Amino acid sequence: MSQLTVSAPRFGDEAATRATPLSVSPTAEERAAVVDQMKRYQFVVIAAGEAKGAAETLGFLAETFELGEPSVPEIYRSHGPGDPLSDIRKDASSTHPGFATGTGQPMHVDGLLEPLGAVRTSLLHCVRQASTGGRTILFDACAVFDRLRAEDPPAANALLAEGVLERFTTIPGVHESSVGPAFKVDENGRTLCRFSDGPTERWHLVRALHTTSFPAA
Image (cartoon, rainbow, N blue to C red):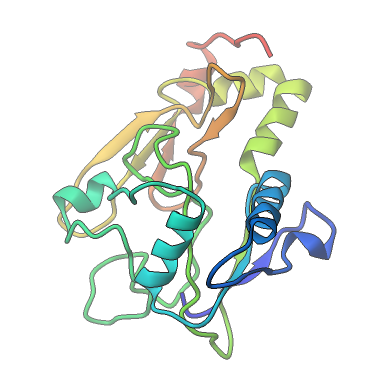
């Protein structure tokens, strides 16, 4: 990314988007501050030590917070270099409809073809600050869904249906899709999300309204 200017309107305080410092050799207090911010807001902006390359920085964060080995999305295992690091920059020679354009990305979650819940964490590294653009809005879809469950159970019910949301590739020459629920409540009561709304989504809400039952909250 050339610039990451984060906006999180629902939080209502600057603390949500203020960068949390993390030194090259982070202390227990620094690590705890990052984890606390993540638990509080479901995301965290980190100012990570001295300037490094993207792969080194992301590897440092993964090791520091014990995220495990990075995964390669299904679409890039079968139709790409198989690299877990995606380079997002304007590139006229690339045919990727999202990563190579200078236009904004629609609202989405990562893991286009992955099963719901497979992608637990995504890391974005700002390579350099651009003069304009790059504003990112973070939307806590799980919090909104939990509120919807309380206020309008039938609507939430439809979003839990197995066939309600189809996500499909738009990369030239690649024709693959994944159908499943938009949300799921796991065995521990946590809400999982693949809710997205853009050119790679097709909704089947009418069918979902007639084929699902609502689990106990």
